[in-house]
Image 1: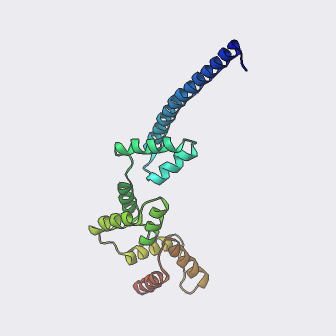
Image 2: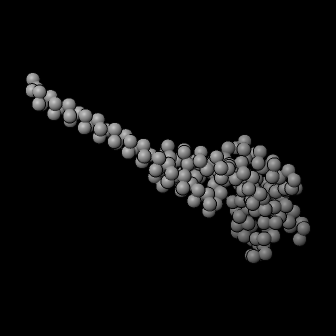
Length: 188
């Protein structure tokens, strides 16, 4: 059994512990707010340099060791100002890529960056509606570019394999490449 002094001392210890816990909770709240502010600043700095998708920004913030809560808050913050917009990103990316990449490659890269397939498809349709996008013309253009720097004799199988591989890496199918190479040979 505790004496009065021991009982008072125990109650005092409990009260001090409760105050410590309250201070810790209060400190955590301030620390959490500070973490969110830092994540917001980091997100703004990252978007200042280049446009990113939500997925890319999330990854960068997570790599910087921000808590998931701070990352979510930072994403919501920059999105509220229109600085983060996956639809705009997809449209800009497609516009930049039309002269050098196949539709397949563009769609794969957008998917890797976290753009949903439906959003990428819609952006593709919007961006190519005004322009007469023709993959065969693009392949011909890439062949001309490749041949201008290093002519490829059509009777050299190794050189032709390299040309096919170059075009395949840009997302064109074997059939598209074969048809373009045949067309190109006929044009010359």
